[in-house]
Image 1: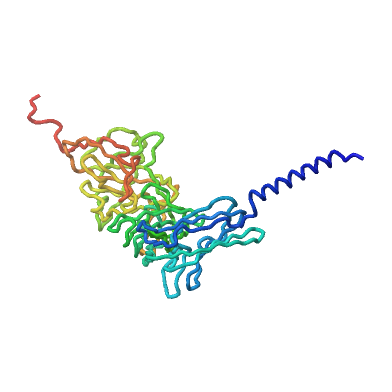
Image 2 (image 1 turned 90 degrees about the horizontal axis):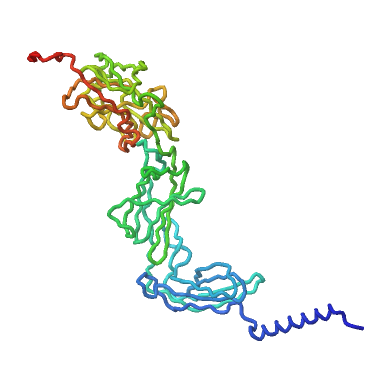
Length: 471
């Protein structure tokens, strides 16, 4: 009876496999789990002087396994450097060790913040590298390592304060910024950042001061949410502020605090461009003594122009002593309210008056409409953006003051007048124009010198002709 062909083939394959395994056993006999493990230096001096600060270690495994590297002092204290980290077989692993391990504190220490990384105390240690396979096989190697002349002082942060802890980066001049004060006891790299719930880190740069980067001393962080640089601030919410100091040997200490952002946003407003007609309406009106306004006595308000002809973009000729009347629309097209203050729309200035003469001094972060002519500067005549019916009054208990805001997406009409009494022959006619001023912040290009118009003054008392003219 003949042996089936299939059985013959199977027997041949089995023989080849057994021969191959036997050959491999001869060439590569059963190896230990840890093929090799060594620390190249027996003594290190981690003090960042460039000499023996670190030692290199190497190891190789014959099977996939997890690796733990630990150090045990002569007193029996154990410090873990690598903890159950997966490693693959037949790869020579190497790394650097400076004596820095996971953070710890001693029994008699009271350190503000969290010690994340720290040097082991000086002394002689037994290092151990332990490998464990998924099947439970364990192998270890060990040796001796001494730490001496270490720079063990921690880069502690004894001072870390934030004030105010709630701020509103919206350039309204009311708690737009917060200040962080930090003191380093030791030279170290200091990173300060905002940490949100999403894990995103937003780094904050310190102010340039007497203490230079990396030195011990005081650091001041003046944080505005990035809005002064034209960026949108972080979304409203409560954040963790992290201050992390790491010294030259790798020790790291961090401190944290909470910071809340409320009503943050980039304010955007403009004098609305009109699809037809003048962006700024200029016309004239007769003066009435009832319009006279001073710091102590507000006058009657002038009514806005109603004549449609005033919409025309044409030169204006007016008599000395009359009122130059203007009218415009302000559009708050941002997502935040804009603060305003000052003389209400309809207020009439004397040409020689300015906002300060009415007790309406500049307020940082507030928006006002200003009027300026070629014979003046810095928009001397200023009005509040909007009337009471469109503005929102907000009481601030911390300042014990009421502030007025134009809500986001709202528009406000602004008008007012200047009694023109000063005729300067060398600048007659002159251009007059409006501007939307964000006080102590700036005037954007689109809001400067808006609606410029030629204004000519005529003296009604001047003779119509020269009496000496023989013609």
